[in-house]
Image 1 (cartoon, rainbow, N blue to C red):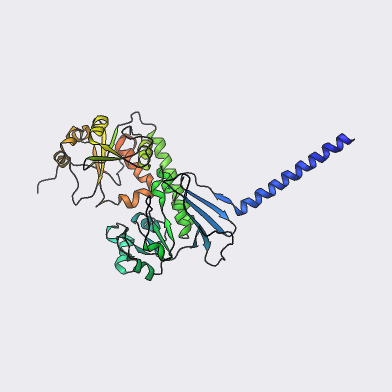
Image 2 (tube, helix red, strand yellow):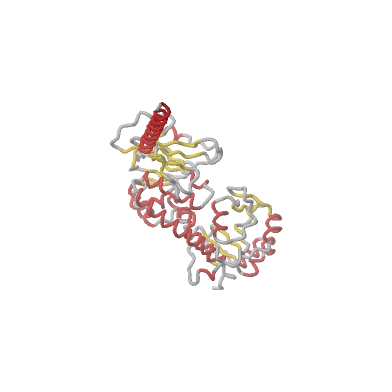
Length: 382
């Protein structure tokens, strides 16, 4: 009897412990539920009691946090558990200053442009709606992205600044205004979908969470379909990117956003080092040794007139050693005419489709590229 009684007690205690653990888990789910981010590695969003805690990891120090934000509704009291190292943001934001054209353009896509009251370097923005708002005075241009007008930003009663951080960067006088700075470190992600997933954070900031989630799901679906399509190709053309800048040839690292995208497109991107997550500086000799026999060469540039094959041949004798220049398989994106830097970061599916089409035209017959186009042999004589 004693043995039976002992077993019963153990069972009851075990059930009680299980129930307590279950209750504890339920409590955690209401105060610490993680918003699942599948691709972004530098961002986490956690639902707390009465607010959302957003943590931006330091891209340059794996063991550090770059910034913490507490997102609280306008009419809610500040929760007591928010520490002094966490920046409080009242959401949705109503009077944003957006320093980069890519994030300003995203706000337009999410239907939140009415919350953007100022931008930096508006003359370089392609987005038609933003250009019209600038012309009408609904959005103000506060100057250089590196040194915006602190006075104008303050006068506009800005409730937050969206800015891209740099390693060791200081925001100077902007920090002294007390206006919250949202450090948009999305560009330091290692995958295109990782960067694009940051739109879910920006959607929450702008009160457009549903729109951001919907757009991101569409992008993921498109991207994964294109990756699967590229995997069916029978060849992996060797890809060379970019151009000489002085004596250095900068190419995306193999572990960078573009490096992974090129491989997803079915490219042999062996010129890049898989261990490099940012831009990789190479000598011209290194490039020629590893990629002069490339099948395809893609370049980005900014100039009034589009490059031609003839111009590239005449610009640098080293280029004449590159096989694509002689086969005509050179594709360019003129950033003065095409909104690459404004559109591609948050529409990696469109960029991937371009690259798949360039590398494997047989997989996308009839598709017209968005960002890149084949260089013409030469300018037509007038």
